[in-house]
Image (cartoon, rainbow, N blue to C red; front, top):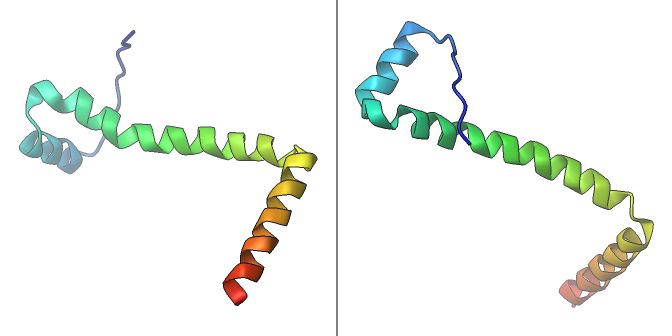
Length: 73
C-alpha cells in the first residue's frame, strides 16, 4: 500500500533531485534513500531484544572467546 507524503525541503535540494532523477522516479529515489535508516532502527531494537536472552549471550561469548584463542595461535 502506498501513502502520499508532503515534505518541505530547501530549494537547492529540490532542484538537485529534479536535475538528477526523472520526475517519475522521485518517489522511488527518496524511498531508497530513507529505507536504510528505517532498517537500522529495526536492527537496533532486534539486537537489544537478542541481548536480553542471557543463555544466547553466554553461548555467543563462549564462541567468541574460543575463536579468539584460535586466532592467537
